Length: 320
Image (tube, rainbow, N blue to C red):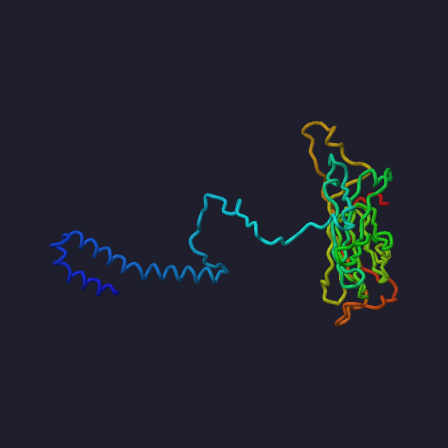
């Protein structure tokens, strides 16, 4: 109803309203209706403009914000809901794996982080296999005790896994910090790069269930404290390149005083490394346009080399 129609109706009912409710009541109602009719178009236009402006800026109008005084999901469960995930570790060989990361006291920063996991089909049989990276201890790094080992579990199907670490040659036995999987030499078999504290490794997949550490040979054996590496073809040449981040300097043979015995108020932490990143450009043969999932034979070419894109200047702790 327009404003003029509303005014007309008010006038027609004015005399009756005087007798029944009183002039003042109807007059107030008519005035309120006129005010509402006058401001409604303006308010609607402003609301439309605000919504259009929000959409232009990438936002979406979601209505009036609501504040709830109670936690709306606490205690709300459906006993008939289906089980989506089930922990079946105890039924597999993975139950024997134990991650080691320093001592329980965690006196040093190196003891607070370690380990990683990679799930990939290393033998191209269509079943995802599991590689669990392990940490270490300061005494193991100093040669005073047996170092912990990583583990490669071959997927046999039906939730059965076989520990093939020794056969594959990927025990690492260094302080593992991260693992990245990629086919760096384009032979159809996935290779493993392990970021370590100490010296990192590149396990080349030989295609017969075994791996060979070629990190020194191809120039990617980064020394120091390396963290999670990443494969990626940054220059689009069809060859996987490698990015290896570095963390702080920590001399395993000359650590700072233990927090358990140091004086109160002493600072913790270590200075940052002067060069904390390293990238490697892959100089192997370009990747074919399309490859089959399964390759029958690995490439017989000599191990490929990788070129270091940036240098690192840091103290190098002794490695095992």
